[in-house]
Length: 184
Image 1 (cartoon, rainbow, N blue to C red):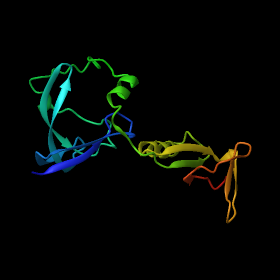
Image 2: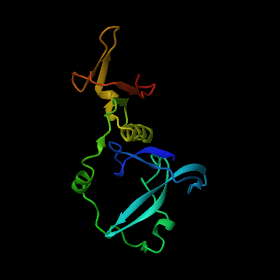
Image 3: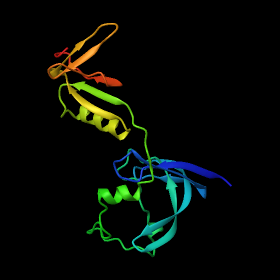
Image 4: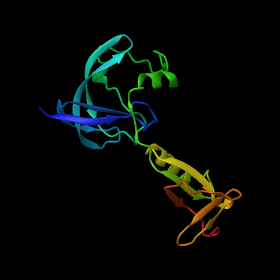
């Protein structure tokens, strides 16, 4: 019997909480995404708990890091059991941060990523915001460093970045320079 092994991040916009899973493989199917892209996905069987009800469903596995939600519940999983009211939300209650922490307290915490500084002049610039978001989504600790408030001491043995009046920034794993020619 074939099995699949996969990790899930159960909390929306949180890549640090990880649950390792393995289960028997039910099938492989070609699935067409909402954008029209076709891909072959692994199919597993799992139980779905909603309110006081619980039943078995088939679920396809795919990487949803670039998508809006961690999971989409399809019509076949809900058929004959769930009635959808598009005007309502959180009918069973919205989970609080404390509820989620309690629910996933035994999950593994992802190893922390790199400490990365983004050296640029405009924190509101779309491309700078996207770099910061992308780094955080991948588990890195991102810091915006305003180029106008720092200077660099560059030498072969002890290079340093001094920031906001002389604070030495030496705890970074990487610096991403995004410096306009007019500032260099």
